[in-house]
Length: 251
Image (cartoon, rainbow, N blue to C red; front, side):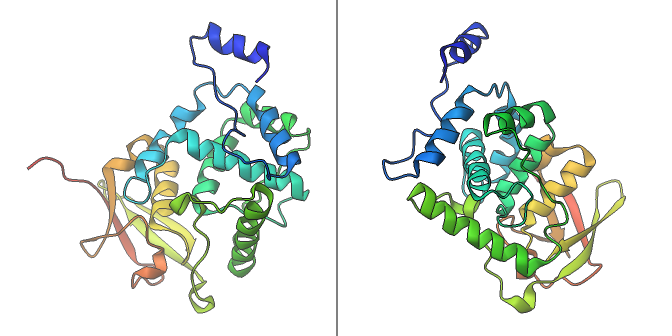
């Protein structure tokens, strides 16, 4: 980290951040290490606090700190830069990494600073890239293999780097109705491979209630849907209704 950036953080009363490259080993591709160290000079401000709802929502899957979610997303963006995939045709993120990436995109100045540090050309996010499910899953698998090759480690981040596991016949898109406590219904067109967690996140994001995500659960015919399962795990068909309710607490 540069002295100038360290001084900025010190003036704000924030602790000095360890390098994003600190967990890498000596056999990591030097270009990846250099790019991650360039990101040490980016001022992320309070961005990690924006990831707390994601971290809390993953408690029933594999609990990860916001700092870990951010670091793994940045390592993904570095892979995109090394692969020259700024136009989003070669590599794709897992569902959790994609959620963190979306949050970065909601902070345009920060995202621009990240891209400037990585060389200037904007790393594009293609919202249409998931329509061809087979191709998207191939890109996710390719990304995980590249992660292993570039960083010389196998990602051990639980569902953060959970790749696609569905057989081809289940890779289809359906429309679901999510009914909230007020009775309002919201429609989502989703892949069968989408996790319940990501569906819940997209619902909360559209409603502007991401901070309350951990207090909600999805029910199908009165049964709680496991955040860690893909939609295809359940007997859910096109136009089925899912109820969003508050979790019960106390006695």
